Length: 146
Image: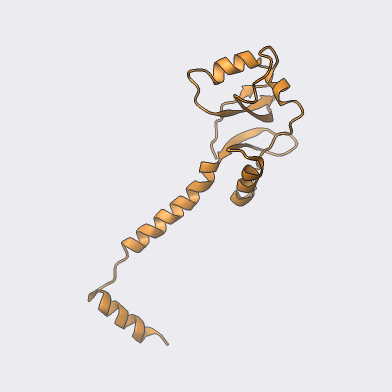
C-alpha cells in the first residue's frame, strides 16, 4: 500500500481536473476523488468524459466507490480488483467515514510473492553442502534417518 496519495477534490470542474491531473505532466492513471475528506470514487480520464463545466462529483454520481479496508487480506483485495476490472483501490479507514489512508495496486499485491520467491531461490542457490561435497551429504542423510 502506498501512503501520501494525491487526491482530486470532488468540487473541481472536469475541465480543471483534466488540465491539472491528466495533462502533459500526468503522473498517475487514476486518482481518488474526495469530498470533505471522504473517498467518493476513483477518477481516470474516461470517467471525466463529461461536460467540462460539470464537477468531478457529477462524474461519479450514482457510482458506489469500490474500496479496500486496512484489515482485509491480499486475496480478498485481489479478487475485488479482478471482479471490478480495476488496477488500484483506495484504502479507507472504515466504511462509514471512508477517510483515505492509502492506495493499493495490483503490483503492490504481487511484490510479497516476488520477495518470497527471490528469498527461496537465493536460499536454494547458496545453500552450503558441508565438508566432503554432495556425496558425503547424501551419506549423512541416509545414515541419520530412523
